[in-house]
Length: 544
Image 1: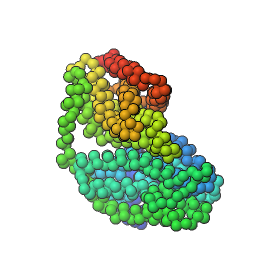
Image 2: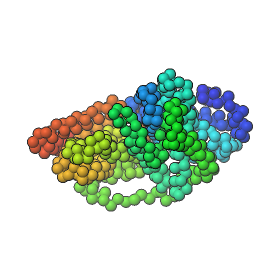
Image 3: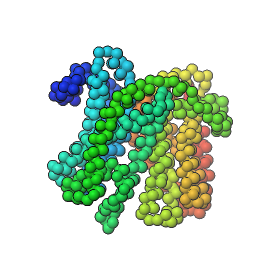
Image 4: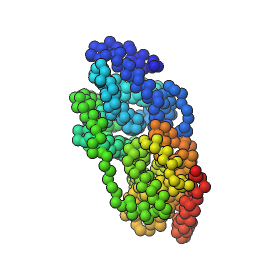
């Protein structure tokens, strides 16, 4: 087994671990196995890359650090430009918390909630304390790597600009941020574990992960609105609700020690940055035994096999599906999308983003001008942001946790699989896209009035046509036929091109709004193109 550099570094502290009653040899072997297994797991950040063969012991996470280093370049301006440290470093820590929390949700929740090692190792002469410490160090190792990749370059450049004290404050802040992220995530799961078990618990955890992703994005807007620009100078207006925004806590010490600002709010934020993570660690250590006991509920599947019957599905199937085969595949695809937790975890956050993005940009417009100006403008075209999730969601339709059952496609008595692909796209549109679109459209009609109904219909037809275009991601494979562990999508370039295509559609729509009767004529043309494209999309491609 590979002797990892991190383990060789950990060997220097062997005596410290053994002084706390930890069997260091056993803990080291457990960590070596965990790190080896991680090398066979694909990080979420690589979900957009072309499928390639990997070397047997290549660690995908280590490879992904290069992507995080590139992301870190956008943090450099916040560490070197200006001297409003409260603003600059609040944004800096806000971005870091977003990226680390996102990685924690997508890649490390399975580590935090893993119970399989206990079933295997605790039946052997393994100390429970050694196993728990191994799990904690496992998470810490990757958080250190991730945080270093994200912040090393900005902090080094910031140190050159502001001095060694800047580096010291930055490192201490990052340690406290990581502690807070891990503990908050664990505490959320702890309270869920107390009241639910089995399959229901797994569903709730899935939705909590999705909710965290969306709430972090919303939190960015709240953070940005803590500051305002007056005559090109950034000013901070204190308010009670800012005590609920953690990035401001961690930006305050820079203002306190580097700018010597010592008003009540700065000192209070600084104290929160120091003491809240420490208090959280103490609470977590007290909860740890109960948390570990409740984790065993994840192995309890009692009462989880029954699924709700959606009565309206039968009526919907009869309306939008023509052939008997397509109706069968529609129900099949509907069940797969509803019951695949991994699919929901990877797709639903994008749905949430699509729901909130149109309003985020509109709020920015209101802040810069006025609500009356917004109503009289063409900002209703922001509804196109609801289509942003289509490329990623359609690309994910090829993956499943039950991918080994894809052999059934070849045994089905069909001459063509065209009904399968059309049914899968119809399920996506009706179950995932339409609810988001209807909610946004209803709110937009309330804001802009009934005059935009024809524009909203144009967006709906455009979204269906855009879905057909994006369905090229499915070519060469079958829906639900590949493992999520190999969820390497058709390429970041293709996603960018798809979004550029959407931008072209939005640009055309914007242009025709200046032509008399342009929108109704454009709608009729779009409907004809969409009907033609749908009929011919898979007619000759998917044959046995």
